[in-house]
Image (cartoon, rainbow, N blue to C red):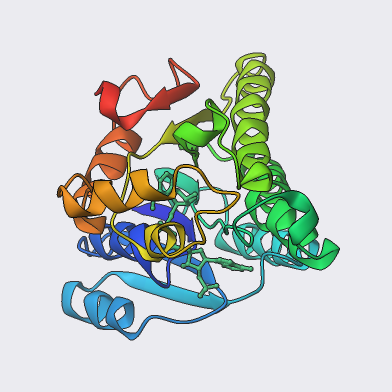
Length: 251
Ligand SMILES: NC(=O)c1ccc[n+]([C@@H]2O[C@H](COP(=O)([O-])OP(=O)(O)OC[C@H]3O[C@@H](n4cnc5c(N)ncnc54)[C@H](OP(=O)(O)O)[C@@H]3O)[C@@H](O)[C@H]2O)c1
């Protein structure tokens, strides 16, 4: 029996990850987004897997983390042989300089993209510390955590923070007898709403806008289903965690 928690599972790559994980009857998948996705409930019904969909706003992450911790405690230590948290949800801000965004928008993007993954990771580690099974945290990062881009400073900051948080948590967990394995993984460039937002942005203040248009036009975007398959394959690797900051294109 395996447990997966997937944030941002309502659409995009997160929906495809959740759908893939729901293909096995022995899997329980807890999905966390502001909206539900009816196709995930249908996938669970078909396979016999268990799907919980929480409608929750990760821009208000303390309450979601507390709910996750309580839910995990309710399962009990021996319910699952494997438990994995996939921090996938993220948001772009209005594309352009910081000064063009409201403080509310900037703060929400930091909370969804960095504070929520940190708090959910803390809740997961606390609640499962005595679980005897394999525990994994997979943070979905981006090449933009490693390469700066004009027009998206907040997103770059969340992903760079996510990468370095992962490195530090990996060191913490390595001190423990049955520490969790953690990875921050860049998933490639994926054909989702996020790319629509980037292509549709005003090129003023966003010099790479045309490059995002070209990626789509030249067929270089990975489908959500293919990207999800690569991410799930990474999660299942026997050596998961041996490199805490990785890129799916290195597989
Ligand atoms: N697409 C790319 O080319 C690309 C490249 C590199 C990295 N990534 C990363 O891959 C991951 C998935 O990206 P994607 O392209 O699939 O994104 P997407 O299509 O924009 O989907 C984002 C997901 O996050 C959820 N979300 C956003 N704000 C939320 C909030 N306040 N509370 C709860 N959930 C929230 C959304 O659900 P609701 O709207 O229902 O809340 C949605 O399910 C992200 O971490 C992204 O940074 C993507």
